[in-house]
Amino acid sequence: MIKIRPYQDADYESVKRNLEEGKLFDPVWDSRNNLLLKVTRAPDSIMVAEKDGKVVGNIYILADGWSAFIFRLTVATKAQGSGIGTELLNAAEDWVRDQGIEEIAGFVDDSDDALKAWYIKRGYNLTGQYRSMWKRVIPDGAT
Image (cartoon, rainbow, N blue to C red; front, top):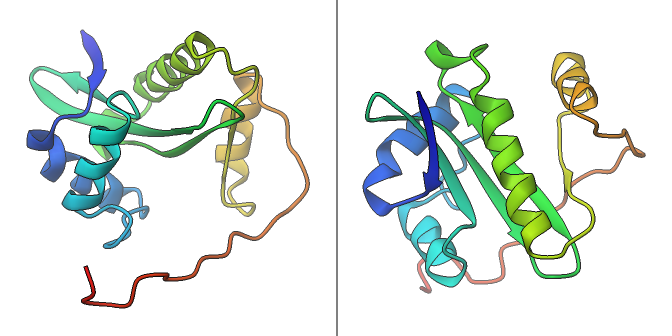
């Protein structure tokens, strides 16, 4: 049985491992401190899937009342294909709906046709191609 629940700091190593397996881990964005700050500010903004006492999947939700994005949806390699990703996605959608936000969006690698098909199967629509850009606003070591 899969249990979807809010992230706790004790989940960090499992979430990190899942992200690394999915080639999604970023040492800054996904640092233990950043995840702790995220859930301190928005307690349900990271959800995990737990099976047999182990965290086997996770999803981040970015929502500000105007829009919502899903980010870092990943499932442990050994647990893929068992519906855990769909359960996490459904939980995120339910949470966004409960906030009164009408739409949810996410980012996928445009070259990953299988992942795009997975989202389309779940009712998502393709939009134009956009490139994500980032900039460090606090110099290294300044925090």
